[in-house]
Length: 225
Image 1 (cartoon, rainbow, N blue to C red):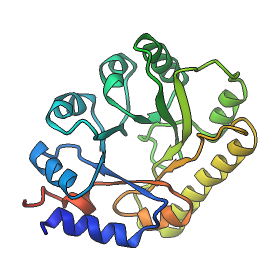
Image 2 (image 1 turned 120 degrees about the vertical axis):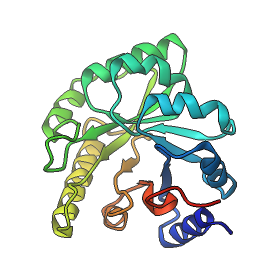
Image 3 (image 1 turned 60 degrees about the horizontal axis):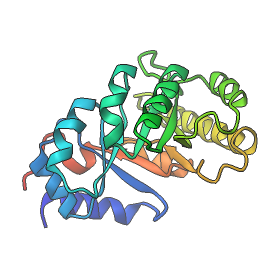
């Protein structure tokens, strides 16, 4: 069993069966990703469009690609045919562009709304009030090629676990509010993408269904094969 297989097995043993792992493979070579695939990993998350474009032909066809980084509207057309889910819908302009391009290729894509819950200004995302307002004005049928699947958020990069938990709680509370109001009756609105290598146990405690794990699986540098 190689290092990745050991890391993956350990992580799977620690998390509930209801939580899925998105292996954050940014900057990782395809050979290492193939090793991860052989170990049973199927969902890979990339921050950059070009990495998905480059790696997609080199990986098995049943890999589920997730776009987890900031997505520029002028890159949507390139990446949309390749991805199953976009975690980072952070503006109405981007949402409209994804709908437009998905309709052109007759594809339905799962999308998560990125919510700004951290204290760092550099992180993208809607404020909770912005998202509540936008979704309250969306009518059924406005986005036929988009599946509204849930929310994504990144906690502050701090050592204070109480602060991290509070930020995850905020996202879960918003998720619950949307489930009972504008997303009421939407059976697809079930995903909470929150938690990374340093804080995923706290995120799972607060209801995460998708954890984005890079370092914990691949190491700070690439694992040996």
